[in-house]
Image (cartoon, rainbow, N blue to C red):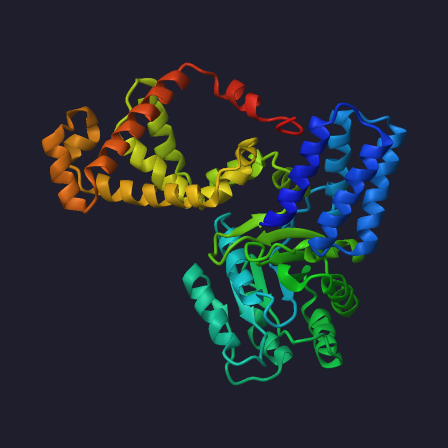
Length: 440
């Protein structure tokens, strides 16, 4: 996400790190670099100059060193995205979340992502379709809800959103969380404003969330202001963060309303929804990693019982190809390697080409095919894999013998690493990775 901006910002930090000393000339040069990078990413020009003036002012006043200048850049970038993380707190039941936004912003898909998010946290969730204008809108919401496994309340024949809400009001209030999909337009016209006002008053939603597409550019600020005036938006979700390099407008839209970004959509799948943490996000695009986000991803997909069982076996010194297979499966659930690399402190500085990461992704898939062609005995004791067995496995899975030997090599390296880590205190290991600003 924001690859171009991330690259530019990393280059700016690199200038700081390699500078012999920090003076006003360097600070002026850096602020100009930052201005070009942020304007190119569609951040509002006025906001850009306010931001860079603060950096210059602080750097000169605090007589910044290399370390403190990096910290100043980090802190001021974090400030324009809301500074602290904001979370939606489910304070009562039913808790009504109304999603608003223009046509094509991704409201219906976001309903599915939020439904999955809250369902995984043991909330009883349902969806309500109040988009009575767009063709197939209600059917789309029904399909999304069915995929997540939550009830969906729609009326195909009714044209009035208010009447649909009143029709299902008694039924939906039995749920913990109600996700309400509203109509969008190509622009925020008077008719839509009136409709949103009426719905807001009747529903009395606990959250009115603006769903805004990352590719909208600097128009995002005007859009956020208009929706805020129409229905007093409380928070923002930015979608399509995986598909644009110019998401600065959407990300800084919150600055015009006082509302905060709570989630970002990072892909098309329902699991591609991240809690938005300004500090972690800025740390990530600066190439400093986001270990907290990585751990949250791991917590969501890793089976705790299986992990505990593996830990017990590791403590005994056991590590088989089955364990490696399980680890690879869990890793795949966390997303593409390229996305995970962004979260690991220091990894983005390695500048590994995208092509190399794609090759590694393909290699993981092929290793799975290889392991599925092995016997239980071979998976449990890979050391018995001689040339005859390798030839048989290669024919069975349609892979080259060299790929199987590559897998065996990876297994041995993983086993060696497991042995090295066996006697380490996990908390001490984590402290080596974690810090206020990883990579400094």
